[in-house]
Length: 610
Image (cartoon, rainbow, N blue to C red; front, side, top):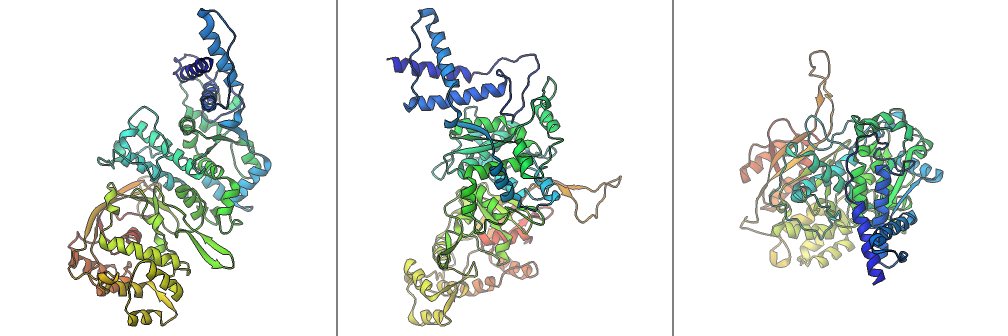
């Protein structure tokens, strides 16, 4: 009975600690992001106590922490004394078990700085990464806005998860109760049947909640769903005095005016990190720190948070060449390792599925598991790489899109755009088996031995003459193999279909580019001589994917639609599927890596991926 009574006391203390405090008309010394050196009764100190008490409750319920009974007292004072005793004992608990707040050691700071920027980084690159916050565009209210080159890989990955919550969990964002952050592969959505893409109509509260949930999910993904490390700033107390009429954002901006990160030592002076094992407390802390992440240091702080959540040693072991910096020279772009870390939780450098065996015990590392949101790249359409099925077919129809120099986001409102018809499902099965044997780095050919493994796995029964013909060169090229499959009867494992009824697909996609920059062509000038800005832009694309009816049509497509040859390919598609007038842009080439032969159209200017 004593244990039960103390459990109730502890829970009462926790409930009381979570009750909002009445407003006070007096100056307060607080700022989101400061985690040390605060007055005992400051809001941040109270937040700390709440986290400790919540953590203590977890320990208490697991019988790890034993709270001894309080001394006997009169009925009138017994509850008060017990409550005070519980709070006192909880506040005396060590920090290590739930929310560990600390400074980095000099060794950790140096390792982190060199890992991100290298030993010889330009001031321009450092300025790009130290002047990019995670915030929406105040004029258009359309997603996260990028002002500096470089951090777009971080912003686009967060933006992709934000779209996931806004589109497919919109009902839950409107609710006040805390929502669990873990929206893994087993999660379902009740709200995706009535999605909304009108970002400009979203309330600020909904956007903030979507942002916080997205950041939390990414950090726990990096932490293998066991922990999230949140990096924040330590600002001297005399620099953060906050009075009535001065916003938190203004306080932080003022405190950051003199802050310059040019070395590991500079990072060491200002960085503080907190480790959270509870999603609830991590969520609350991220919400409190939103003004910090919206400040000019936000993108860099979130990247550091993700790296520390993964663990610096694990990040280095994920990579094929850990000697290279994660931020690439000379332009300071986010590497593929950064993007992959935020999308799949591992800082692998490649986009194919699994690992590629190079022989001699050497491997190239790719994507190891299914992902929530995916990735497409223009480089695949140029035959520089091959994106695997894990990234091409994520759980939700949302993709980060990479070009040579920029990252944007592509998404659909309806998850059924990823549903496969019979031909597509069979093609995915065969292609996955073929790619698993492809040791050419995405070149599209495999060995004879690997080819025999493919036809065994996919139950393809090739006639002897076709088998000998394919194997005669000593290696098998995908395009030649696929032509044979299209002309092979279904009873033998092929896809020959004379009816032509295997399905045309028509659907809408949306593309978001958050860049805000000067007009590069300089052809337009405002009155007064100011160059206009490119604003964040959302573009709706109508997409039509015709069926592959015959091997001849497939072979015509294999030659590859390009900007110069798009009109010829588009003309054929128009004849077959009668879509809207065909338009071309580099984004269309990215879309065709996911939906071959897709035909796209849109209103207004072409969507830009740069």
